[in-house]
Structure formats: C-alpha cells, structure tokens
Image 1 (cartoon, each protein chain N blue to C red):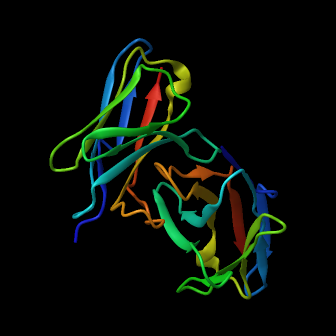
Image 2 (image 1 turned 45 degrees about the vertical axis):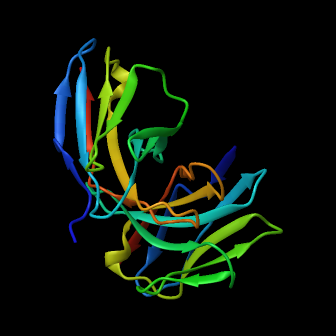
Length: 114
Length: 114
C-alpha cells in the first residue's frame, strides 16, 4: 500500500505567477483535502474533493482552485501568487464512510513566493 | 464552526520526565478529536484520535489523551518522554457531519532535553 505523495517537494515562484501542485492519494482513498501551513502555524483547510467534486471550502479566495481526477489524484492551482502564499502545502487523503476516517498526510510542497 | 487552542507554544522537558500538552476546543456541534505529530521537514502523522466510546485513547508509542466534554479539552500526555519525541504536536477537530475538514490548533513544540 503506497502512501500519499506530493510533487514537487520545493518550488520558488515570483509574485503574479501561477503554480500547480500535485498529490497522489493513498491507494483505495476517495477523498483529498488540501491545507496551507504558514511558518510557525497550524495547517488551514483550503478545500476538499470527494469523488471528483468539491466537497467544501475554507476561507481562501477563488484564485485557489483544484481538481480531482478519476484515479483520485488531485491538483491545487494558485493564480496571481502573492508573497503571503509562501507556505507548506499539505495534501491529505481518506476513505470517507461517515465515521471519522483518518486523513493521511503527504510530506508537503514548500512554496516560496519572491 | 470550530476552533482549537493549544495553550503552550513550546514545552521543554527532560528525558524520562512526564509531559502534558494542552488542547481546548470550541464547537457548536459534536466533534471528532485528533492529535497529529510533525517531525522537522515532514508532513503530519496521526498520533491518536477520539471518535466515540471510552474517553481515554492511547497510541502505540506511549502517548494517551483524554476527552473531557465538560471542559472541552483533549490533553495529550506521556508518562516518560524520549529524545525522539521532539517534534511539533497539533491538536485538531472535525465535525461529525458534512465534509469533516480538520481545524488545527497552532501547535506545541515539544523539546526533550537529555
């Protein structure tokens, strides 16, 4: 059973650019959630995808968007990057059946916006 | 909406001493409760979780946490810590319906000294 993987591990962009981060969920999982972890803070929920549909969104602007593919892998896209977007982006997968399933996290992508 | 407060940003402790990391939450609905651990430059790993039943839950590496509904707390304890327990610990909650996104506290840095 493979775990959650994310790519790339590190990324440097400049303000105004666009970025795509990728996540491969754990085998058998149908739900992917994305979190942003700024330095020295706890992760903050961006959005969640369940069977290719957005299933909830946190307090992030529309320039944060995502996709989930039929194999349940996922992408996070951020347009018009701002300096405050510099953070560790974490992907978590789970198999949702309605009883508090564990979310398994990937190692994250560290994004630096200059 | 939920919120999580981790009262201590850093907890220094000597090896083999006991430790308690405090977590309080606020929610208008029933929640699931989690503790995650994050080692340097890594993603989050689930330490333990409370879904229902016994209010005392244990992990395989000696940590335990007790759900106290009246005090809305879920403090993490270990009777004897090791150097290898040095890490960032995050308390998190999710509601029992809907998307079950995790709301995290700001984290507690456990520093185990020899």
